Amino acid sequence: MSWPKSGRSDVLDPTEAELSPKSFAVIAGFMRRVCGVTLPENKRFMVQTRLHKRLGAAACTSFEAYIEHAFGGSGNAEEQAELIHVLTTHKTDFFREPYHFELLRRWVVDTYAPGARRPVRIWSAACSTGEEPYSIAMSLMNVPGVDFKVLATDVSASVLQAAKAGVYDQHQVAPIPPELRQRYLRPVDGRRDQVQIAREIQGKVRFASLNLNLSSYPIRPQADVVFCRNVLIYFDRFTQINVLRRILAVLAPGGILLLGHSESIQGMALPLRGVGVTAYEHCPTR
Ligand SMILES: C[S@@+](CC[C@H](N)C(=O)[O-])C[C@H]1O[C@@H](n2cnc3c(N)ncnc32)[C@H](O)[C@@H]1O
Image (cartoon, rainbow, N blue to C red; front, side):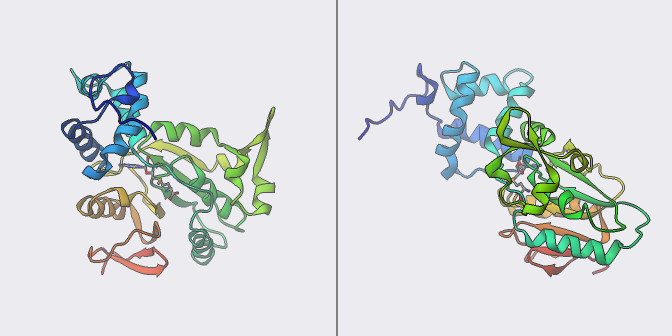
C-alpha cells in the first residue's frame, strides 16, 4: 500500500507533478491543432505520466513551467517535436494485419505484372518505426516483372530516425515469414539480439516527415496504393474525413486504400468501394 501523492503542481521531483485540467487543456489543444490527435479528459493521467520524463529532461518542476518552456515566447520547436512523439502511439508490427500484404501482392500481380511500364507507387502514411513499409517491400520484392517504390511518412521525427536505421530486436522480427527473414535480414556486428533490414529492401523505401493534419499532401505523382492504418483512430470524425479526402486527392483512380482493422469509412460518402477487409478501391466517378 502506498501513500497518496502530494497533489501539488510544483514539486522537487518532476514525477510527482500533477497536470491540472487547465494545463491539460493547453496540451490537448496543441495536439488537436497541430496533429489532429484528440486527447479526451479521461486521458489526463496518461498524458501526465508520459510527460513526466519531459519535465525531467527540461528541468521543470511543474507542468506550468513546462508549458512555458514548450510554448513560451516564439515557441520551442524542438520540445514541441518531443511532445508530439511522447503523446502519439507508435505500436506497430511487421506484417500486422497480414491479409493486407496478401491483398497487395495479388492486386499488384493482377494489375501490373507482367512487364509494368513504371514502378508501382505505395505510400505508408503513418509508418511509425518502419515495420509496415519494410513488410510492403518484402512482400513485393519477388513479384516477377514488377518494380515498385515505397514512400513512408510519419509526424514523429524520432520514429523516422529509428525506421531509417532499420535495426530491430530478434523478438520484433518474429512475425516475418521464415523465408523472408532468411532472405532480407542481416546480422548486426557484435549484437546477437539484433538484426538489420537488408540494403536491397532499404533501398526500396524512402522515409520523410509528413503531418496528416496539413491542408494538402505534397505527393506527386499520385500513389497506386496507400496504407493509412491505425492512425485515424486518434483523430475525431471531422479530421478523419478531411484526412481521407486529402489522401484520395493523391491516390490514383482505381488505386487501393488500406485502413486499420478497427477503422471505418461508414457514412462518410467517399468514392470508395470495398474490396476486402478494411480495403477499398478508389472510384472517383461514384
Ligand atoms: C499506431 S502507429 C501505426 C503504425 C502502422 N501504420 C501500423 O498500422 O502498424 C500510429 C502512427 O501514426 C503517427 N501519427 C499520429 N498522428 C499523425 C499525424 N498527424 N500525421 C502523421 N502521422 C501521425 C504516429 O507518430 C505513429 O507512428
